[in-house]
Amino acid sequence: MISNNHIHASQLDKSYDIEQLDMFLRIKSNGDIEVQELFKYQFKGEFDTVTRTIGDDNHGGIKDFRAFEIPIERYNGESPDAPVQ
Image (cartoon, rainbow, N blue to C red; front, side, top):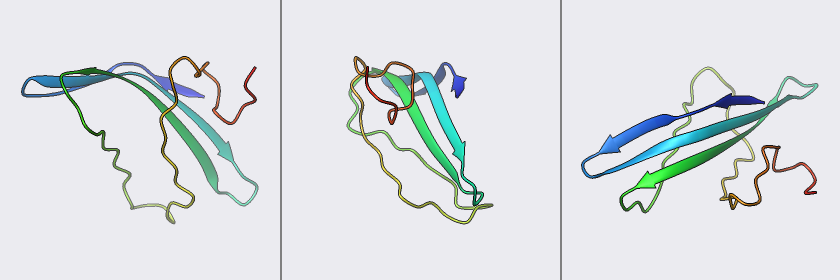
């Protein structure tokens, strides 16, 4: 797991912080990498969406992309694919 804390962005009268970023990486035998990124946001002001940009250079592409919201009370610091205790 790779973890990074506190990234801040602001525009006009609203802003957000990424309070926590946890990354879970698994290198498969064929060289592919499975990546899970979990962001914990703190919003100030009204937001409708969050945009995540992934560059398309220096890799062979992205397959099986999924994005979803995990309720904070369910996240325990482990990969979402780990069995829930």
